[in-house]
Amino acid sequence: MESLPMLPQPLESVLGQFPARRFRVGVVMLAVLVTLSAGCGETQTADAKVRAVIAQGEQAAEARDLSGIMDLVAPSYSDEQGGGRDELKQYLRGYLVAHQAIHLLTKIESVEFPYRDMAKVNLTLGTLGRDTAAATAFDLAADVYDVELELALDDGEWRVTRASWRSASN
Image 1 (cartoon, rainbow, N blue to C red):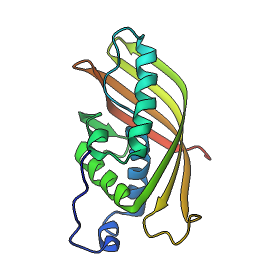
Image 2 (cartoon, one colour):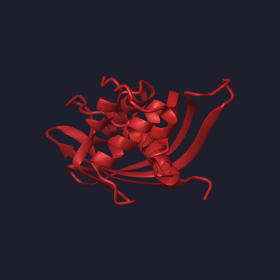
Image 3 (tube, helix red, strand yellow):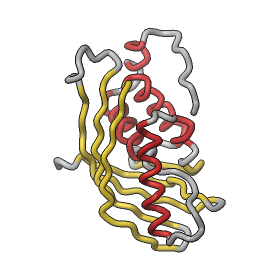
Image 4 (cartoon, rainbow, N blue to C red):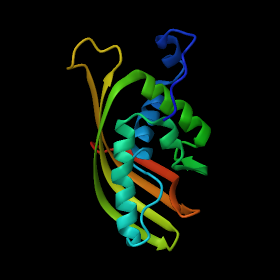
């Protein structure tokens, strides 16, 4: 697990560097990307492997494991806002600093395999986080998203190559 570095600035100034929309994107991507984990047993079907990866990743996200999350992201990753792997890591680090508790609920709607080494996953993702500065247990941030992921098989491990999402309330 990658430990988060000590910040030389007050938390407010660090988080102030993230535009609200992009920070929210980072929050979503944290939830999405950590729902993926590398490698599964050879005896499982591809569908079962992808589903198991998502379940394992959900647990990793709740453990706030940034390096574990980033291990699941392909070097060629891109999102619908034009962000790449490095930008994603920056946003996720900010989210982990800002939220001391993270809880996810995922419902896999479909898993398709257009190619042997590519999976397309549609899922509904519920996120619940508690801000570090929250005064009470009721200071929560919750959202629900419809998420589309593309994963590629890379050296025997599934990695996220593309992601898109939208609020489920739209």
